[in-house]
Image 1 (cartoon, helix red, strand yellow):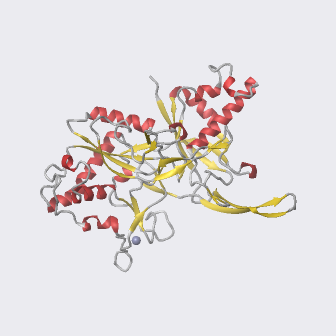
Image 2 (cartoon, rainbow, N blue to C red; image 1 turned 90 degrees about the horizontal axis):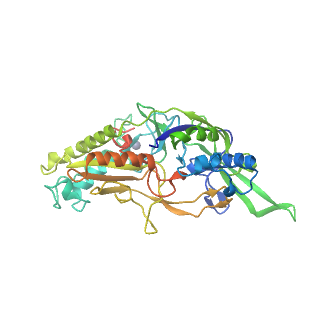
Length: 436
Ligand SMILES: [Zn+2]
C-alpha cells in the first residue's frame, strides 16, 4: 500500500521576494506568502535541467527512458502535493481562519507585539450557537434541535455574544475598550503547547524607470513600482508542508533542498532562498480534535439552555469543521463554487452542511515551463471555514474518520499538486474560547 509522508521545510530568503501576477496600472503587488506552485516549479525546473543534460534532449516529452528519469520518478503518476509556504517564527504555519476576530482599533495578538494590541478571538462557536438558536431557518435546525424545530426561541440574546462583537480588553482606567471587533488577517503557528503569532514580511517598494532607447530619456509609461517582501528581525522564514509518497521522499528532498530562485524579478537578483528540512509539532490526533470540537459546541449552547429549556446542548451527531489551509478551486458543472457540498468534499452520505464563513478571490500564477501567465480562476480563499454535521444512526463514525483522514492528506477541489485545496479538520484554533 502506498503511504503518504508529510515533510516540513523552512525557506529562508536571501534576497527580496516577489510573488504573484497582481498588477494595478504600473504598480506590481506581491503576495504575502510563497505559493505551493512556486516550490513545485523550482523542483520541476531542477529535475528537468538534470534530465536534459543527461539525455541531451530539447523536448522533455521525448524522454526515452521514463523508468530512470528523475523528473518522471517524481512527476509521474502520483506527484507530491506542495502546500503554500507561510511566514512564521517556527513551522508549521496556518493562515488565520475567517472566523478570527480582533479589536478594530488595536488589532493583533495580546502577546508578542510591542504596540498596543487587544488580542484575537475565534467566533466559530459563538456564531454557530447564536445562529442556531436565533434563526428558525438555520440549516437543518429541526435535526439539531428537535424540540425547537422551526419555532422562535426567546433565548437569543445579543449579550451572549458580546465579547466577540465588542472588544472586552480591560484598559488601565478599569473600563473595557468596547470598540467593535473586525476580521483578523495574518498567520499563526503552533509550537505543540500554544498558538503563536506569525509576523508577515515587510513590503518594500521600489520605483524603476524605463529608458526610451531611441531618445535616451525616461519614458512615462515605463515608470513602474514593484513591491517585494524583505527580511526583517521579526519575520525570518517561511514554512511549507509537502505530502509525498514514501518511496519518492529521497528524490524530492534531493531536488528541493539547497538554494533556489523563486518568484519574479530574478534578473534583478530577487527570489534567492535556501530550503532546509525542519521538524514541527503535529496537530493532536483527529479523534481528540473531534471530541474537543463537540465539547466546545456544548459549552456554547449551555447559556441558551438556561433561558429556554427546549434548547439541547448535546447534539444528536458529530459536529465538525473543515478549514481551508490554502485556497481551493471548487467547481460544479463548470461553474465556480464557493462552498463544497458534502459529496464534493468526499464526506459520507447523510452528512449535512450547516454554515460557511467563506470568501472568493481570483487566482492565477505564472507557468515557468511555458513562460506564460496561467489563466485566472475563481477560488475560495484560504482561511474559509465550513461547518458540517454527521447525524448519529445515519453516518457511521468509522466511515467519517476515514473520510476526514483522507481529506487532510488529499485535500479538495482542483490543482491540488500546485498547493490548492488543503484542509484542516476541526482546527484546534477554533476551540480555545478565551482568546489569544
Ligand atoms: Zn480593543
